[in-house]
Length: 263
Length: 265
Image (cartoon, rainbow over all chains, first blue to last red; front, side, top):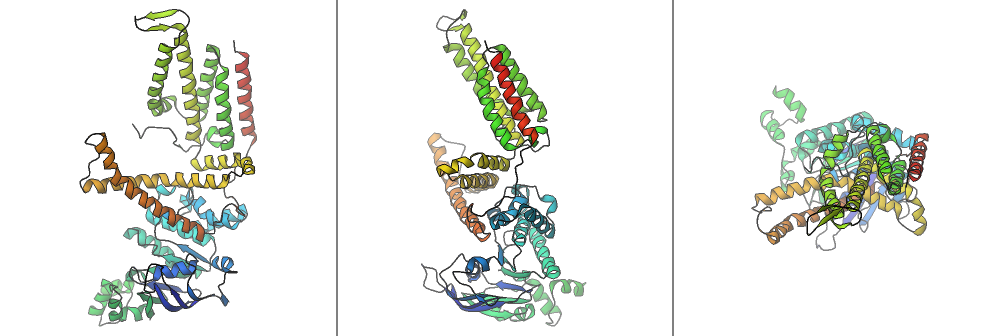
């Protein structure tokens, strides 16, 4: 689906590479998580994919096409992104205006916009809030609107850049369960960027980043087992994983399974 | 007091006034501003008052509610009233207090001018009370479209207005948070002389500006990745629809203005 070949980037004021010649590929229909602590390069990576940073080295392939100056407008339409701060990405005056914002930019017919807006709000269970103003919504609800705004663009890849890190636990669960549903039922391709290991459970593939390099790559189980690598990358192994390691002789279980087994 | 203040607020509703096209409302308010000056004696003013009261009723708002919400403004208007009473001369002397006199001309102009100002405040408040900010910006954008020929960036201005309006509550919350944070660090805002109080505002405004700039940058990125490239090739989700009732409202207003010209003396 997307592959990055040998991507490198250096911020002007700095000596070290923010991204040090990395290659990754994401598959369609999969949930890929990129995890790393602050400053590990994961957000720089997103900026490069989204075209916010343009003077990078290396090549990006979307499908089989190389991303170039000419086709970048068209190819980038295949990605939609939800950022961290729920307030700073809410453009519209109401929920439906915000979802429709991206569609207005595409120049769609009004009927099409209404249909897509309704459909997208339905997917995130926000249809009843359609005429609400942003300051009357919780953080979790605002992020759900942002997801709807991204989905309305019918992207091939939905990118979430620390989308839950500013939410309270309830809002975080709200957003995560919506994403799990989307992924399971509609096969939405998800690229999930986080610094929190407890959020990667549903990933098909996990990529661990540290200091601009990829230090680990594999399934959730493989990543959880490589405790030493996680600690080197300053990532905290979730408490539940520690418990299952201690109690269940190291056999891997997800959080949900652990609860079942313990009870 | 501030929370009951009605200036610039919007109260959702489903009255006939709410449902009028925002463009019709803006044009009506402008027309009304002109019409108000047609009245020059009590019949005209009574008609104007009656008119504004009926619009208030049609908007489903109570007069008491409006009055309470605009109290602050009315207090300001008392000053203009007093100015006229004491400074406009002519007619018979009503009160002779030695160093000041109140004359009949002054009393009458004072009353009329105050009524005029009250009516203008009430009618514009009725407009903002019954029209959501987004509808207003949409209407302004549409009405100002001809200015594009003069290279006025109408769309950009409207976009800026609607985003600013959307950020008011967010920045209010933020200001409150910063005030609390600075108070917790020992800042005091309510004591000391004027200079000290102004100085105390610096630690509020600097963080507020910093965060506003950060927000603006993130907002710009969020808009860009959602394909915003200015007005070119953009369609509109919101549709303003001009109906018969909007035309009717304007006709009623024009007829009312004509009536006022007839009762002039």
